Length: 117
Image 1: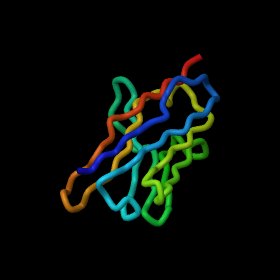
Image 2: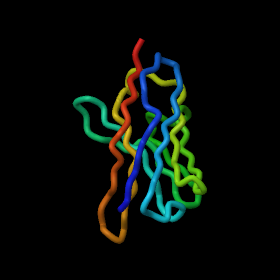
Image 3: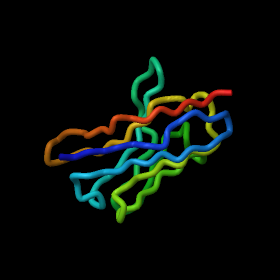
Image 4: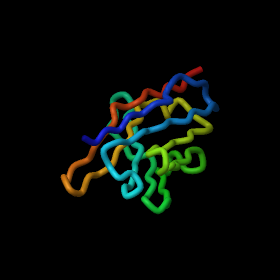
């Protein structure tokens, strides 16, 4: 059974930082592309950052230069370091990966990030 569990969300003031973690089980983690998505209130879910099995990264324009995705294959964990947070970053953040063998995407339960003064 594939399971993704996020942690690290919370409330922070504008300009602050948070680090999200996502622990994976049930997959050979090092083989998988891992994604962070977010969904703000009243908006569609959007892709924030991606890291390939080889460590290549890609970011949404809205977070480039502020967010950093990384992975620790020994710990089966992917991270999202978020700096320079602003209220527009308020959302539920989800860890996700696509299972080719099932042709389906797996999601974590999400972790809430609130940026407010």
